[in-house]
Length: 178
Ligand SMILES: [Zn+2]
Ligand SMILES: [Zn+2]
Image (tube, rainbow, N blue to C red):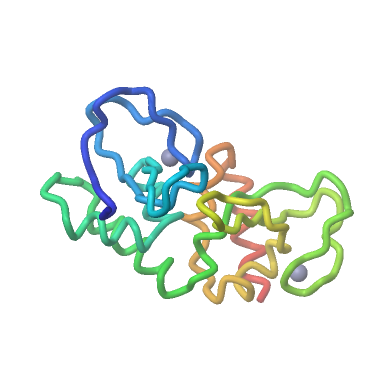
């Protein structure tokens, strides 16, 4: 089954990227994934995403779906550029969100040093077996090294809607450390 873009027929589906519902009649991206729970081999399920969430989190599926659609996406070129970035730097889609470390227990996946309490860190998700699984953290200052790009701020802001401008400035400062 190919990945698709269609207008949401109901407002009930939740986006697998951000967890928010996808409004009826707005475009949504459907990724065909193996259905792990089906009795028959080759069965597939569809995971729905807001177009932007798909571009950030499932870039290959987004680009394939965009190729095959005649549904007009107003922000298509911008989203295709975001997805292309995620394909070029294959760790980028793992970026879950930015947060201040609530404890000092986690070690950075990039430098292996503990992340101090209250320091900015980037949470990671690995996509495996048809779902996103929490996969640890990197120091915000290690993020450009880990993701192999320093073009991170727009992505972090999309992934972390609660960030204030002040938070974003602090993160930009961290990303510039490397
Ligand atoms: Zn979403
Ligand atoms: Zn680190």
